[in-house]
Length: 251
Image (cartoon, rainbow, N blue to C red):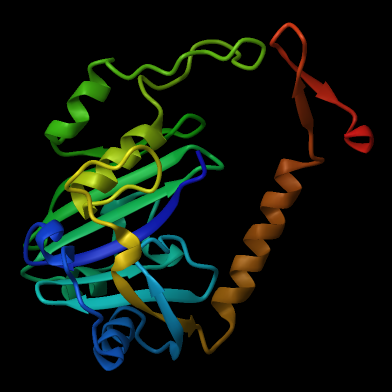
């Protein structure tokens, strides 16, 4: 899987009816939303995009304002622990439903959360390496088959080193959460009533910390990750179906 998301929405209810037949919002409305979400940041309109741009590059925010909903995609808006959503974002969604969804295929991580009228109803964040980082509230109905063991991760011969540490793959659940909470999927077979995310227009903004502190901290974090990962290792499937490490120079 290669799906990545970083989505936050403020809505009056279910997003699906709002997204069906959605027309482009005014740029000024989207810009006002972005400025509320990132107070004090430099905000510049740089173009247009669509809702399937769910994981924009650094310092880029995609946003739209629709009747009954406001939706943003930005890496800075999803958290390993969704319950720590900053107070100004809770205020931005005051009196409404707030929905967060995040996935990252490189580490098989997903999170999703929902607030109603400022109260956290459900928050889940998990990955095979980090385990269950947050699990607050009762599971939604769509989650239960996963927790009940109906979607186990089958081991890959020569690759898996023991049983998968979770009862399901986080990205499988993440796709289902995306469908239920936002009305569309990125991978897998679409259902007849799924939204076509590429038909929902959004506005793209460059949103930067004018002090430069955020950018400096981000680059330092990236460098630390590169040091932690170490040299690249490459694997190739052998004739017997097992994965074998190969010399990078001979790849």
